[in-house]
Structures are given as C-alpha cells and as structure tokens.
Length: 399
Ligand SMILES: [Zn+2]
Image (cartoon, rainbow, N blue to C red; front, side, top):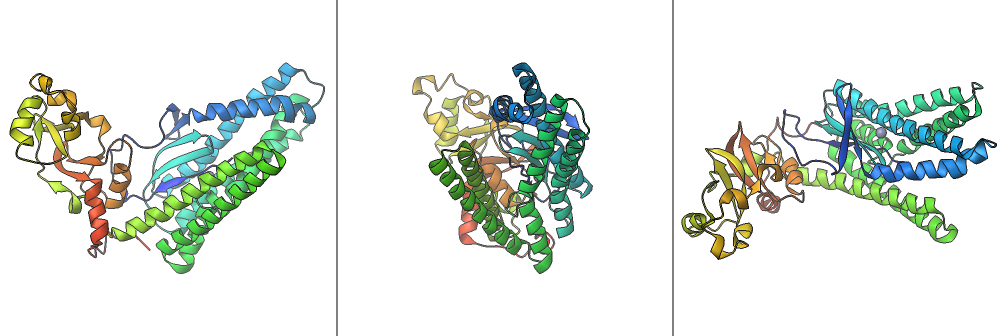
C-alpha cells in the first residue's frame, strides 16, 4: 500500500486559515507529538479486506490448526497494528519535517496509506531528503522489530501476527522507496536531482516524469494481471498506478504554474475595494441599489464592517421575484465557512489551489478580520495568460 506525502510548497509565512482543505469524511483520533492524526472512512474498506484475507487465507496456511475465531482475532489485531504502523511511518515524516522548520497540519490515513499535510518549503535538498527517508526508516525499524518478535518462539497466534506485520512493514518500506514521485523514493530522487543541478523546477519535472512512467507501468502490469490471471491484486496495482500518475502530474503542474506566475502574490492580483453588500439588506434592495448599477458576479457581504460571506448573483437570480422583499442577503449568501479565505501575502499559486476547490472559484482576501479584497480564479488565469512576472528577487523560490 502506498504511503504518500504531499508537501504543498507554500511560502510558510504563518498563514493560518485554510478550512476546506484535504479529503472529506475524516475522523480525528487525537494528537501525537503535536501532530493531529485523522482517519478517512475509505480505510474501513481496507481494514475489512485485510481482516478477511488474513482470516481466510494468510493465517490458516501460515499457522494451521488454530480455530476460526483465533484467526479472526489475530486478523483484527494485525490490521489495527498495521494502521498504527502506517501512522508511525507518517509521524516519522511529520516529526522530522517539523525539525526542518516545516509546519505540519495533520496526517490522514486513507485508502492508500497515509498523507502528511506539510506546509512550507524545504530549505535545502538535504532537508527534503531527510524528511523523505524518515518514513521508510520507521517502517524498516518496525519490520525488523516484528520479525524479531516472530522468531522469538512465542505462541503460534502471536508469532503469526508478528510475522505478517514484519513482512508488511518491510514491503511498505520497499514500495515507498521506489523512485516514483509522489512516493517517498520519488522525493529522495527529487532531492538528489535538486542537489546535483541546483535547479528545483528541473528536478521536479524529471521526478514527475519518472513518477508518471511508474504510474503507466503499474497500470499496464495491473491490467495484464487482472485480464490474464483474473487476479484482484492486478486491479489494486492498476488503481495504485492511476493514483501515482495523478500525483506525479499534479506536482509537475504545480511547478509549471508557479513558474508562470512568477513571484506574484494575492495582493498583486486581487480586486481592491470590491462592491460590498450589507448582510441585513433585502434581495429587493440589493437589486435596486447594487445590481442595477454594477455587473459583478459576486459581492462580499459585510456585517458591521466584517466580512461574513459571499453573495453570488446566480443565487440571487434563483430567488423568485415575489420573495425579493422578504429574503435577506444573509439567507442567500454563501457563509464564510464555504468561501476560500486568502491573505494578501499568500502566493498566487497557492491561492489558485484553494480556488480550485469545488466550494467556489472566488475567495475573500481578509486582513486582521477586515475585508482587503476579492480574488477570483479568472483573475489568476488572466495573469497566467498575460504571463507578466515581475522579478521579485527575495520572494522567488529558493534554488
Ligand atoms: Zn512515506
């Protein structure tokens, strides 16, 4: 199973918002060493699959003459310890990342293993290398530990669980060390290329192409296994290949976009002093006073001077005319929780990522609780087309 780390190379300038990030449907299971660990519901399917295959296949053949209930108990313990192993792998990345000065939001365990949400840039290829290898090193350590337990001559049930955990942790380490971005080995390769040539963007391009190559290879191999051998692992392998392909492409795209946007920040692209509406105003008033004289598609909504939401003209148009004088802007707007919140100092490429979320392609730029501006995905697209990139020495990416 893949365990993957997504470092969002933001500028790490103490950005403190971001509500709508990551995968939905996560259950927090607490903080470990200051890092929040969350479980994605897709894990239930994986755990069920592991319990089933261990109970009916792996344990009966490796440790014969035990009862079905014993196999089931062993399988439940083994799959829980397997989840804990993946969590420790990710925590390994997170703890080292923090030592390297990178902010860690949380780690999420899901279908393909774990993802650590890291924010900030690696200061050097060495830092990236250390963060990338820390997870596989944890897996190797756990693998060796479990193998030692397995050969210690404990009762058959304990020994079976330990042997499987030793095997799976070593497989996890080996798989993650494949030089296939976005797997850990791909990060290691990236760090090596970055150091060799001193060119971060070039290293990302090359690592991404190799990652995509692995993605295609896994898909082809998986499909062949599935078609010719009817093997379920083939479908799984193809699925992992597809996941790698998407991840590798996303990284290449991120760097290409970042280069195209130069050192632009939200403040360079946002609309200052946008036309605003009052939360308690009625839709009728809005139509008469605002929509009559402006033709914007969205309007920030203020309540006592503070931004509380975003009113889309499309939502207003959906309100029947007979309700215009009763309905308030407050009841028609997208509340703040559904709107991407940006800061002026954030890079345009990071803002683009937030605005690409399904929740909306417009974000409010907020500064100390006050509305500073409005930024839409089209503002960024326009900058991409124009391709203007002011040379901003100090704020450009490190190389
Ligand atoms: Zn990892």
